[in-house]
Image (cartoon, rainbow, N blue to C red):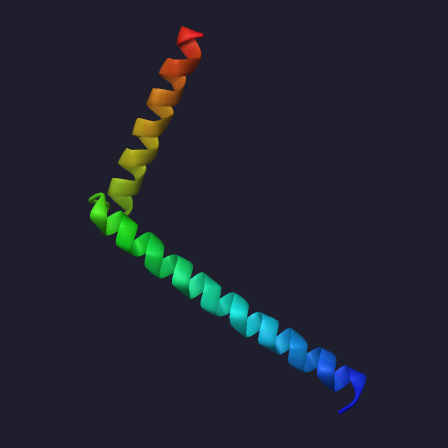
Length: 62
């Protein structure tokens, strides 16, 4: 096998591992979201607003 083929195979393997890692992360995020009650985009928006509000309160206290 020549060097270009080895590099191509190595890049392909890295790409496949990256895709698998992203799939695993997505599954984990989905499980955690379900555990904390996030079901849809509206829930995410509400969470972001809550976090921003808490952050702003902390900054105004300082």
